[in-house]
View 1: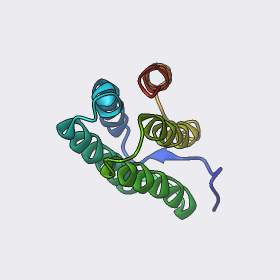
View 2 (view 1 turned 45 degrees about the vertical axis):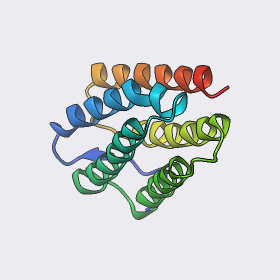
View 3 (view 1 turned 90 degrees about the vertical axis):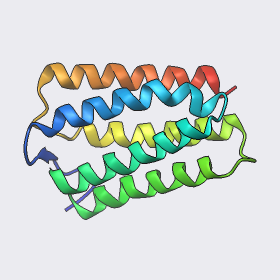
Length: 135
């Protein structure tokens, strides 16, 4: 198995959970980056943990794909735990985290087309938020 293997939801209802989790990430992202709000950071960390758990438990994935995402999740959560890290560096790590998710999402073969389009739009919005608030 490899990082490029196709990915499938074990139950298609979980695509809605992923969708709503990404919507939640996008709504708290400005507070995480711009003002480093501790409540938003804790919510962000909780959501990254939930997404990782859902991904590993409810989606057919390879160990390489899990490790790929686990590493990015650990890195972003460690960066957010360090109060001395700049907004720019936080933004850089958030972008890496988002890019890894997007890479894996693009390998999910049983997303409903409308959900896939919506998720790509949310990711585009999140990248714009990062660019706007991390300077």
